[in-house]
Length: 185
Image 1 (cartoon, one colour):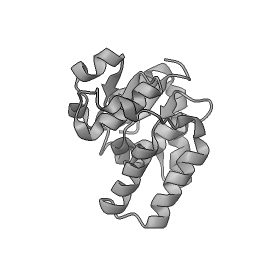
Image 2 (cartoon, rainbow, N blue to C red; image 1 turned 90 degrees about the horizontal axis):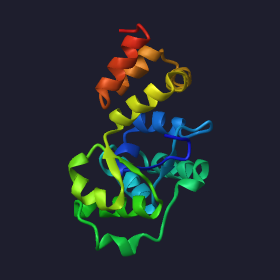
Image 3 (cartoon, rainbow, N blue to C red; image 1 turned 120 degrees about the vertical axis):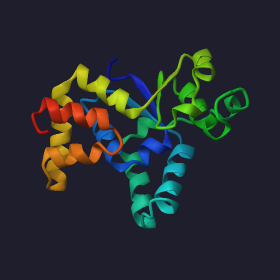
């Protein structure tokens, strides 16, 4: 994988703040991949933050605005004509359509069942759990991953172990691997 490897981030991934924070930092220069999303994906994140996670409106607005400002190249549009031809879960067809339009090779999602292989393979796209992708990125460049986790820890005034334990709620194998490799377990 190279730094311009396009990865479509599903709303469920972006709404998980701990995982999204690490993934977005890995998409900053020197980036490990190029994130992709649509306005519809960002609106879904916003709804989730407000309605399910009880974020104040100004905070959800700020998150969406920051994503737009920091990653203008991530936005894709003009994919609506593809939706009717897709065979994955109807509520997530817009995600696959956005990935196709942006020429992404991968969709990161916690909802793998919504993206069966037979619906993705005609388009040359794969879907993976964020944990699997984080482990792949770690194998490719462990120092980059550790430095980003260290930055998160510093910003939150916590140690790396605390950050990794918190990440372990969503990506346990990734967290366990790093805790072990860093002799923090």
